[in-house]
Amino acid sequence: MSRRRLAAAVAGLAVTVATLASSVSPSAGVAGFGDVDAGRYYTTPVQWLVDTGLTTGVDPTCFAPDGRLTRGEAAVFLHRLAGSPPPAAPLPFVDVTATWQTAAVAWLAGAGITTGVDPTHYAPQRLVTRGELAALLHRFAGSPPASGPPPVVDVVRPWQVTPVAWMFAEGITTGTSPSTFSPDLPVTRGQMATFLYRFAGDPPTAVDPSSPVCDRRTARRVTVTGFAPYARAGELELHAPADRVELVGFHQANHDGAIDQVLVPGEVPVTILADRGRGTGRRTAADIVVDPEAEIRAPVTGTVIRGGGYTLYCRYRDEFVVIRPDGHPDWEVKVLHFDGLQVAPGDRVVAGVTPIGRHAADLPFVSQVDAVSSSPSWPHVHVEVVDTTIPDRPSGRSC
Image 1: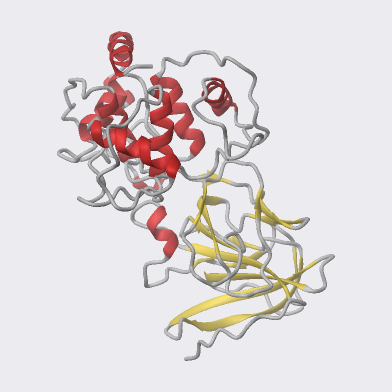
Image 2: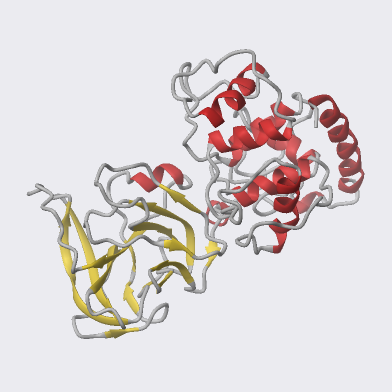
């Protein structure tokens, strides 16, 4: 769809939304959000999203501009931007199960805007990066050519070069600094709003001065997990350690025997954190961002073999528990970063049922996962599964 055609479609959509809005009570919260401050780069774009019906926020009073966007959510925004057309072909991906995403992702695939992460998977829970959104938006526009390379030093992957160069040429982005675009960083909802607004040609819109009160605790994109499984290590299911989870950040474990965690389709957003240079798999550990007041429960069924306090990074007090899961006598499931240990060696624990800690630990430093979670950051719980028959190389670290 060309930008001119898009602008015409958006103008028509705005008229429809304005008509609907006239019959809605001002208390419904459609005029503004309490967490969208005046004068921010995303203020006018978010107002435009509201005016055109492209968003209703995460609730009537909160937009969560610093919240991260998943690939499923990105598909929904692009589908709405196109006028919510019906899919041209059946959904080709087996991992898109949420009903609010299926039509959007099927349309994206049928229109050639996405081919998924592989022929049968779209990864709707994964956080979408700035480079990925550039590629989706470029294909949405019909893949126009770029007049030259992007004016930044950090866009080098071939599939990113033309889309990012096109975004700069069209004024859709100015980058994250004069020389960078940061293609591997997750997109925030505020950035997404801004990209879409500029793509539509910066249509005029009046920012509503009202400022509803926004409860920033509810503004986060939090998934109520019911302690359901979030991943598998081999055939072992790993249950969410808390009932309220913001996201899962997979990363490299320290132990050479750590086992890759394979995501279980669901609603919890996920991301793979940057390489830590440890030589282990990128999904051998998980930092699970949880509600700071949430009780921490066992991620597997088994027997506690160790637990207690220790000194993290030679400086910080932390607590841990190690569980031997049923059916895997040589495996250990390690859970770190919580306060108030509730179990002892020899105790039996049941996945998603037995409390092992009062709440996640509020660590006094910035963790890697904090860069991709909402602000202010919530604490995280670390979960990894280790095959103890695989020897671990000495790390060389000592206190």
